[in-house]
Every structure is written in structure tokens, then in C-alpha cells.
Image 1: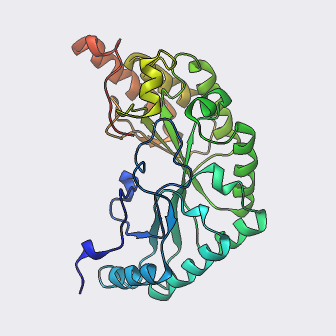
Image 2: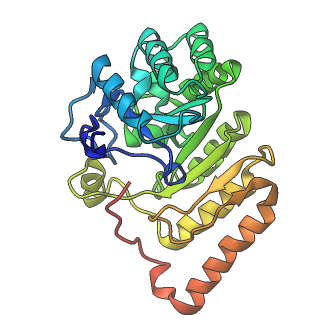
Length: 302
């Protein structure tokens, strides 16, 4: 059997912390957009599609490691939905050749690429087991989306999530805490909550915005164009977001990313408990480390 490091992984490979035990199959490498001001993950990797023979070789490798009745797999990297629907369907068939009981083919993707797919295409992808997809929503506020250079508008977010809803593909909303900075602070919370309430995700995952050295966002900060929120303001905004949410009780809020000062997670049926935990963390810092609340901590990670 080949060693795992002989898998065809190109550059950084990312999966959500909750997917630590889910196998990853590379079908693209790099990012099809690669222009977000905060991201340097794929700066040195040109976007491309993995050859089908590489994909099959990797599936053979995974089949020697994971059980035949595997139910979930992640296809990577930056945005597999940049591939044609025909190619994605071919990959789904190949996956099920080696893992016939697969019920979820997950991936990380963007509004920008999903929005170019027709409703019929998304329906086909749902039938082919693409589900539980992670979308870098970041924000529902036009000002923030433009500031981050996401490549789409909030109107396109609504249109895209409507198609996704109709296809019955579930999604996880990836949000960036503090992404609006001082300029869009209030609008960011209000508009993002409105979007999520209209199209509830199965999970909301929030990460405090990191400003990596060498990114455009770092330059914007240094030039005074982007003014970071303090740690107190970020915690207050997380509380405000949770209070503004009106989503199904089953929706899970994940806040345990390493960038987050307050690591709080739980189902939103327990909104009051989540808010109480955030307030407890805020009180803890006020009593024990008040100096960090009114500054912006350095974060090099996304």
C-alpha cells in the first residue's frame, strides 16, 4: 500500500475543524478567484483541475485506508464548484465506484461559483450526493463584500441561496467576525442576520478576522482604510448576531476556531445559553485581563 503522503495534494489543504476525521480527495487545486483581500492561502498555487487519473489513484489509496461503507468525503481544494457540472457528476460516479454507500460529498465553495450554475445543474449535483457544502459567506452586507473583494453582491447571495434551497443542498455558512471593521460594524450584523434568517444554514461557523502579513487587508489596515474592531466589540457583535438570528433550533453555531477569544459553540435552540456563555467570557476578561478588551489582537490565520 502507498503511503498517505503519495496522495496528489497540491499546496495547502483545508478542512473545517469538525471534519478532522473526514477523508479529503483533491479534485481542484488553488482557488478559482484568489482575490479576496484577507486571504493568502493559495497565493502561490495557480488554480487548476486535477486529472481524472490522479483522482482515481487517490480514491484507490483512500479505499485502502477507509471502510468500504464510508458515508462522507470532502472534495478539495479552494473551490470545486468552479468545475463544470458534467465533471462534478463524473467525479461523483467515480467516488461511488470505490465507496458505494457515500451519502455526502462535501466541499468548500463560494457564492461566486455556485451562482453560475443553473437550477437544473444544482438539482443534478444534489442527486449525485453533493451536500453539506461550506460556503464562505463572510457577510451579508454589500459594503463588507466589496471591501473584502469577494466578487459578488448580497443580491447574488440571495439568488444563489434560493437556488441551493430549491435543490435541497444543505450548506454551512462561514462567517468572518469583525469583517466590517468600524465602518460597517452595525450593517454587517444586521444584514448578515437577515440573510441567514432568510436562508438558514445547517451550521454557522464564525472565525474572527485575521490579518495576515502581506495581504491587501494588511495594507488597508496600515493605510487606515480598514479599522479593526477591538476584542470587546467583536464579542459584543457575536452576541448581537446570535440575538438577531431566527433560524431552526437544529442550526448549530460553531465558534471554537483558534482565532476566537471566546470559544463558544452549541445549537441555536439554546440561544440564551450561548449568549450567557459569551457574556461570561466578556466578564472574565473584564475581571482578569481587561487590557486585551480594548485592543485588536494580532492574528495571522484565516
